[in-house]
Amino acid sequence: MTDEILRVDGLKTRFFTDEGQVNAVDGIDLSIDRGDTYGIVGESGSGKSVTARSIIDLIEPPGEITNGEIWYRDPDLADAIADDYPDAIDGDRIDLLRIPPSVRRSLRGSNFSMIFQDPQSSFNPTITVGEQIAEAVEVQRRASANPRSTRARSEEYTLTSMILGSMFSSRRYVSSESHEQAIELLELVGIPDPVERADEYPHEYSGGMLQRAMIAQALAGEPDVLIADEPTTALDVTIQAQILDLLDDLQEELGMTILLITHNLGVVARMCDRVGVMYAGEIVERGTLEDVFDDHVHPYTAGLLGSVPDLEGAAGRLQPIPGNVPSLLDHEMENRCHFADRCPKAMEDCLDHPAEYPASGSDDHTVRCVLAETGYDDKRALPGDYFDGTGRPAGDKHVGPDDRDGDHGEERQHPPAETTGGEHQ
Image (cartoon, rainbow, N blue to C red):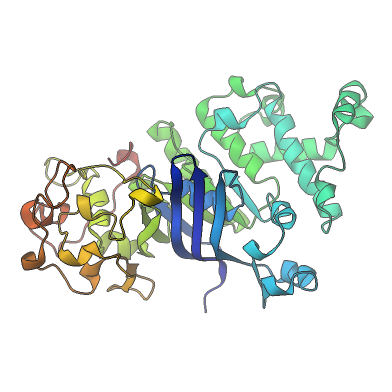
């Protein structure tokens, strides 16, 4: 029996803009076991980061979570709030979307934490790194002292309090204990000379060190689930490897569960136990790492893998996926497979929105593609000019990534993290 810590069912997140409704996340399902690393992979604009922010309740207007359930397993929390919110409780699980926003916010840091894409913009340039990490520690310390009160996170700390704190050390928000723990966190994530580095400002840190400092800040509340949104973006390959090693070590040491958001298949291959491939707001294929890399069904998954250089194979040309991620505006999205206009195996069946079918491999392997149910039939292939204006043919008139070497049964090697960099466009 698996120890499922997080389950997302039918999650939908919309942005209501002047141009229309944007279907950023359109009914996704995923399940993460305690201590595992789950990867969500896809091109920029596919909805990966919005999914992560929806789980941690960081969607701001004009965005809104309009449907779905987010089940989080925490027996102590379920018992503590069962009397106040009985409709949100199912045994030892809590539906985070059925409890008030104030309670959801109180879970940030202690239960869920997030590493954001750009550490440079996430730290305040006017405050030392150590002070900012110590503030995160202090917030969790005060909340732990009064877990039923969300006001304990700030204790009405006002501008006047901040001014008095700058004048009198006894009135400071951050305690000496929290500052010492911040130094310990910097040491934990491999920052050299953590005592001296704690007194430095963000601009005095290199990119890799600042990413480590952000991880330290995310660990301040010892979260159950750590969401890492593109944690190696803009880092050179050597630093990327160090950050991934660090996350591995921290997961083993602290027993954390990690939700990893990335476009980098090499990072997925190195870090993840299970994978969800995301396209146009939907998870189009999901399963174990071996399911997705070795027994994939969806042509989009095949296209992503075909876009990765293979250092051990012949020096052939890469097979990029033609076209771009479609518009997610509701009035521009047709009720069909959203990948059909880019798909090398588009058929008439693809003009209907596909259900999620079971695929070969593990019980967790599912795919949102008719190929899992019917297989490819060139007699039903769409004509090459069916999707006008896309600049590419449809159907088998275009050679797809799986046809590159003519051997469909050959096992693909997982791409190394060092060789995968930019976006898969």
